[in-house]
Picture 1 (tube, one colour):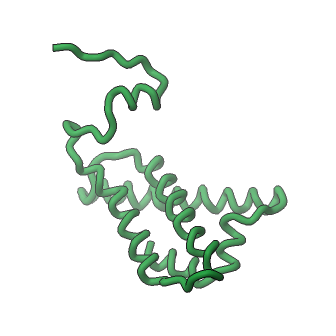
Picture 2: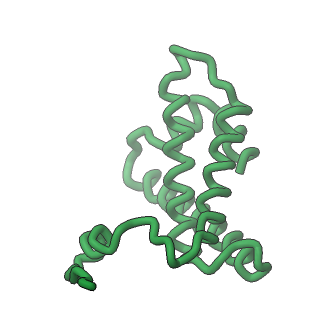
Length: 134
């Protein structure tokens, strides 16, 4: 991941254009396909990690897609400001790689310790929340 991010940052204008610049419909379809392929590759890596016992069970497709969205957005921010401040390629690449690793290894947190409340989960899924009483 760090290598991928570093290469994107070194591409500067090209990377920025490929990730966020408005494009015609045909080019945009290619960009969306590339993102989907990248998310599938991330998903495959996560599934390999689960199979090897390196990661806990998790929705590999969802996390793969989330990682792609997160790291592309994280690459865009410093590229958008590159004229104002020099880009520290290494520290950004390492930070994004650590974030991505944390995103898949965080699934090791016990199911007994929910990361969001039952009420928030119900709101997100559109289900009814029933308060438990003692």
